[in-house]
Image (cartoon, rainbow, N blue to C red; front, top):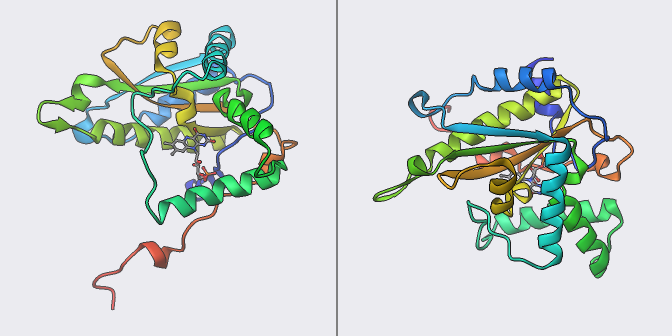
Length: 229
Ligand SMILES: Cc1cc2nc3c(=O)[nH]c(=O)nc-3n(C[C@H](O)[C@H](O)[C@H](O)COP(=O)(O)O)c2cc1C
């Protein structure tokens, strides 16, 4: 598969088959993904690749915390607000997803259920947690955002490579909402900043979410061309 096809096919998957992903496949994806560029080749990413009982333990703990309405506390805070045009784009995703799922605006119960599905990473059989060194990120004089940026680059590599292997992914802040759980279960020290989780598995074509495709602004709306007249 060429890169154009992989980019076109990739989308966030919110319904997975229970089948696990062979370790060999995950190793191949990860080895190739490490070719991502980074600031002066610092390669600031580290990974915890998790499946089976450990993943269930994390899922269970996340659900318990959510049900106890424990406030979420990701290492990288979620946006405090969404000024326009970002709010409209964000809302469009939620609206369309709920429509496809048949979840009504006022249906609090189903909305709560859906929230839990997200926290459980849609029952994906494997999750790849990405973390980076806190000392490199949080420096005297301010934040060095570049390691987080670089983690994004390697994350996209993983997600595009997954397409090649017939796998689906979703990058998810919901995967890292309770970092203390991840630290406990996976032994990730406090010196690490947990950035993101990528759920990975075989997409379930029976899931209604499979029909969902997010939209994009047109190129002309987001790009200005200079010197092309
Ligand atoms: C950093 C990041 C965090 C995300 N976190 C979540 C999440 O917690 N739950 C979720 O359902 N989708 C999450 N997404 C997926 C986005 O909603 C999705 O990428 C966007 O709507 C575009 O859709 P697409 O990935 O299908 O192209 C996240 C995406 C990114 C890049």
